[in-house]
Length: 85
Image (tube, rainbow, N blue to C red; front, side, top):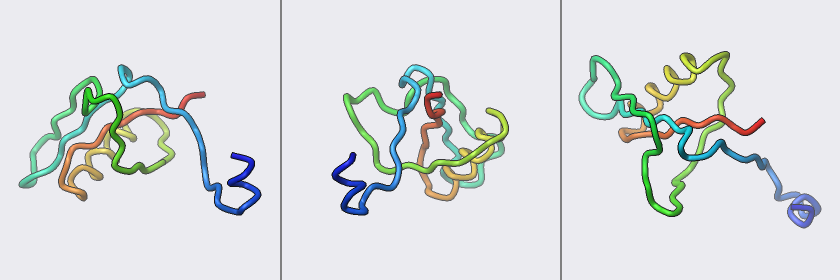
């Protein structure tokens, strides 16, 4: 990290809570009446991360609402997890 910081390339680092704490939200497809909210990670693969968004939410309900909107916007399932700490 120090090398990246010195080169001006470091943007952000943080750890996520364990995959078991994840919630998968699927609001993709034709305007669903209710999103499909499932406890657990989106994938059971050893490692898979296509990208991430970091948002600030006042509580889990607000985060779930944003995840629902994100899933609809990108047309696929999203996995919601908190940052550690």
